[in-house]
Image (tube, rainbow, N blue to C red; front, side, top):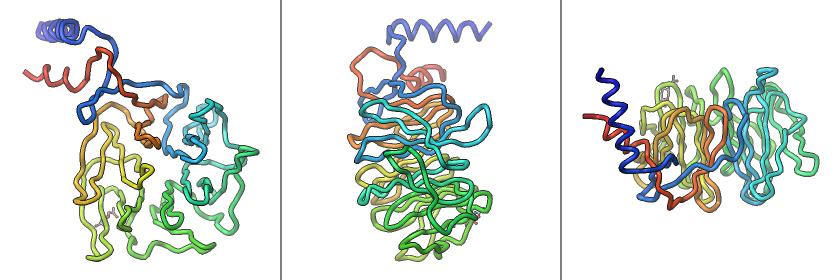
Length: 283
Ligand SMILES: *[C@@H]1O[C@H](CO)[C@@H](O)[C@H](O)[C@H]1NC(C)=O
């Protein structure tokens, strides 16, 4: 019986207070609604934006072959397609100064060519199954299943000396300090203090930098911002089944859900915020 009361109560609340079917989230007091950028992509992971060409890259699982593929989607023209020439493509990172788009596959490093929409092998590194990549002063990447962190710079490959732990995801802050995730949690390695500290205990499935180098991460239940000064974590919003996040040049958040990629755009519509409904549900 109780369940009916709750449902009735919820629908009354929705009807009375929000009178809308549009779902939205509130970030810093502004309401945002979802805009569908791409659907029919299964478990899209690692997103990256080339700010120069305004192209979104992401990897997803091809249902037919159960292998990873990388797709591109022009945010300017909607031109969409699969990147060819890469085996088990999973990771993407962009050098914003040279405009090089790097990709990681199950057999090493590749570079993307816009004219042919294909990726070709970078010399030398063929024995690494690449899990995630991040570009800062060089190309950082982690491997699977070893979970080791490497730096590729000036045609030279080294294991990141300060990070000889298991590392699944790696990012570099503007101050040069590392943020990394392993099965023990999210950590920040301070290059001055020469030590790591735990900054969050959530499951992290994606980490990204915006155009200014500020870091964000996704967990299956929400999107978070890492305050660059004190490394405190700020929850921007919650949602279900999030797979990855990236931030557009204008600050809009784009994120991956189980079978789609959505962008959050500011809205003035009447809409209901899942978090508000949850708050009301508690008593
Ligand atoms: C994760 O990193 C922390 C901090 O560097 C380290 O103490 C811990 O052993 C690592 N966990 C694993 C599973 O390697």
